Length: 454
Image 1 (tube, one colour):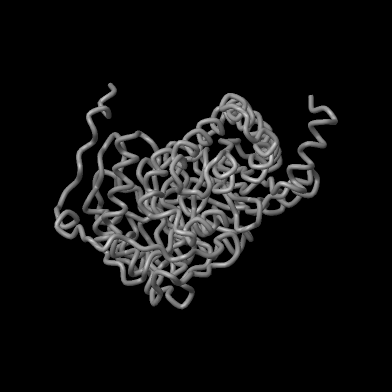
Image 2 (cartoon, rainbow, N blue to C red):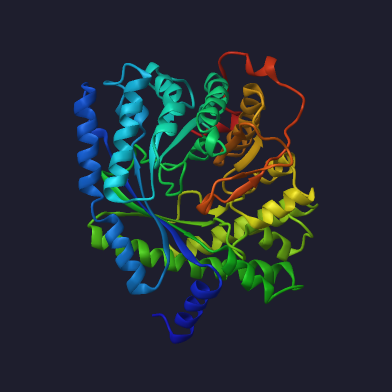
């Protein structure tokens, strides 16, 4: 039973501390819609999505009004299209046609994003999956709401270096095709190692093949709430610091659990997971970097930052799992650059480098996220950065991801402007030393020895 004090506390979190439900995401399986004819397949995909998700936005808005909880986005994820289009798609143009169908369905249902234009190639690529990957630049440049992801490695299978070599050039091509908008197409493309099946956050959301026909996953966020709580225990011991983060994460997760259960009931769709992720926005006071500074570092990126982030990530998860039996997705702390004012300040002040960010990804919940780099960066360098990040995920049995944005026509000292939740990003320098000979090797990096658990 919620008492009046807890109710008032939740109202304060919402009105003053930027607490929000970042997304209600409906996952939809398209496995039963597969057809060898591309036109019939597109028709099947459109019909199922618009049928299943026709009330998603309406229900989300109703919950938002009734409970006074901001629900920022309503989204859809679908089965990886690399699987769904394998029989019908003979060319890149066929996959682009599916992407256009997904975009049409997103507009018909009025959702903010639709994820799942994806391929799972952690051990190797089929002909169809390689064709999908090659179609991504055109697909993302011609659609508005479609998001794409590629899983190129896992702890169990190792790292597909052929796929990593390919995606380096695909990212550059996507940047070129959307250069008039500061290469924003790359903001809708993320490269994963150990991608989860139930992630509600874009651009990496897809509906895993182990999921049911439909599911409701909710992502809740509250960096501002955590920062405000830590201001009350400034200078206290690590024990009190950790307890404060856990208790705050518990309260934030309970809000997500309430919204998830209500959405599940009203949409007659099974509840999947609550993803408790401290996902920042460009709004003042909604920054993960500022939480780390409140813990005690002068700037995000200073010595001690990685330890502070590890502490934060762990305590967030500990608090979340006590609040819901089904915490999943990417739960923890996100460290995107463009979406976090504290991160932007740290980069522009010289405190935070790409190399320090890579170290921080060893202990955060995702990886190198929303990082703008010079537009003349070589494809092999991009592939090398992705390989490094995948190695961290593969060896440490965690999800890691890369969302790099080579901004065509811009260099270090300039900024890319994306607008909305994506914000803006200072362009960060990359190493001037190359890795061509490493990336040109064919094959895959084997799974680490500790992958053999059976």
